[in-house]
Length: 104
Image (cartoon, rainbow, N blue to C red; front, side, top):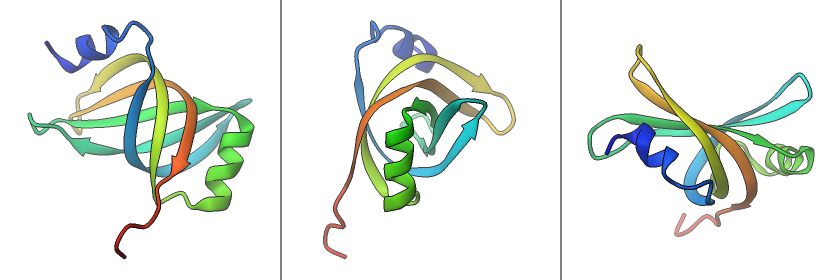
């Protein structure tokens, strides 16, 4: 099963992502979180573009955009970008939590 099929087969159930948020943008009337890409076991990069509420966007901006978060998201689609070879999963951020700085 490929990455696109795996995301399509979630049945719109929420997933947990533990990643760094790279940026928060406002595009039109939608806030988007850009979540760091990471290589999976097949060395393919997977990144997330998640629509979020204004209150979630505000929390990320106030806390820290380049910290690691536990993100609960619902993925709607995934598509492969050819150059560089990255899978972008798109969906909605349902909730997030800043992970504590452990051992630093």
